[in-house]
Image (cartoon, rainbow, N blue to C red):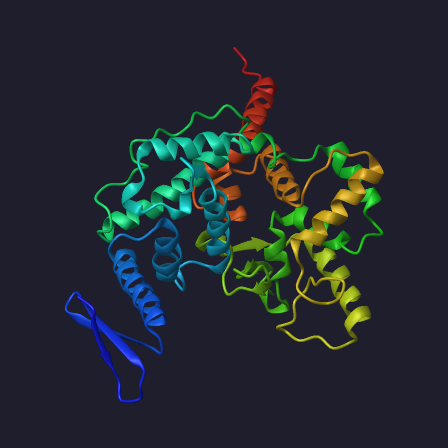
Length: 367
């Protein structure tokens, strides 16, 4: 029960006890005192509720994200925040998903989220988002905020769309390659495009390449440009994945591209070169970023009538040409920095199938 008394300075004071702790409020009038008392009690009670039975919003922002900071990369946190933002505002029974208590969420609510997401996303994207949501609830179970994961009974949707290897990972044909590079000769990014298609390196890895990374006749992929939570870019200390740390032997084509780029750097930066200088920079001499590169690609494709593609197509083209020229898939896996053989086969297995067909046509066994 709240206690009412008058202080020596004339102000009114009330106090109340919650969970063994006493709280005080002060005011000049009884009306103001009653209002402050109500607000303080609400604040205290809701704080306890959030600690013991938090909303999805509170758990995600105040507990889950904070626990992952410093453990996962800023780029991963930013990607996960995008997933969360998409689902948090979905309205279920008149209330946004983020405002539900963890303990209130049922499997049917997750199925509702699936249905809403399917209206504007591919099956794979929906599965990825629900899998991410399941990760959050699984951690809530481990932390003992809830007793079961409501995503557990929800079935993964069956994919009916094309595999990534048939869409964004498509390779350029030889004719497309010739047509593109003929049109791209006057582009600032010309050497970057040539380097990408000759090494299979990602744009971020190319932008992170220093003079000191070229030695012993090899490219040593040590880092990549990464995007932070606030959307800005920075030069990371590692490549995209642990397996992305790799070595790519130099050939004559790559050597010629590096020599050409170093001459351009001398023209733009002066005849001063440091071993730790970046080899490939943005036109304004900052970090090389994928967005302006893809904009330039789009312009060239539009001008030449080529089907639009992003910079990732150079990586896919490198992989496909390697397979066509009978480079072992295990070797290709290492050149691309894939974690395992299965990932390489999933993305570029169609090129292996084409090579097998050609190989069988070329076989002539004397009987």
